[in-house]
Length: 154
Image 1 (cartoon, rainbow, N blue to C red):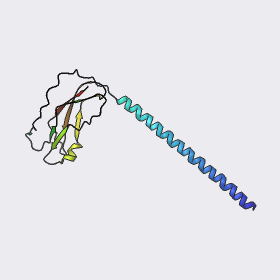
Image 2: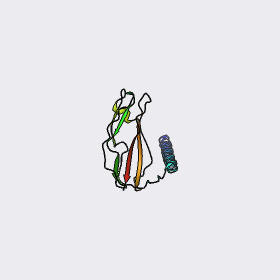
Image 3: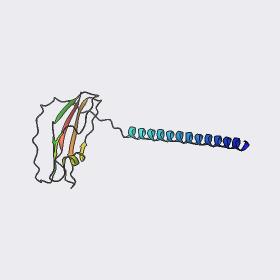
Image 4: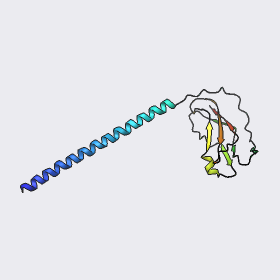
């Protein structure tokens, strides 16, 4: 009887120790995750750039741009659906949505969409006129003729 009591007591102590170790590990994981989150927020804050809005000019009538045929058929061709887009401040905007078509002699549309590079700063919360430039590079390193999009945030 005494041996059973001692064995039970030792098992309880062992279980309590295991639970304590598990809880401390869980606390350490939470602290590490919070620390990593804080570091990521600091990096993002350092990288955030405040764009300078371009003064608004009268909005030109949207004109469909004919697809330019490059001199070299190996060069990809990028076509935008519009040259100017107006959106309300604070609304959502997908940078890729103005791309109507991309063609290339070798690469398919899906792989070309992953290789689009958009340059230019803009803010969805600051009213102004912003110029974005679109270029696509194919797997052979050929770049398309740059296309410009005027983004007007009102």
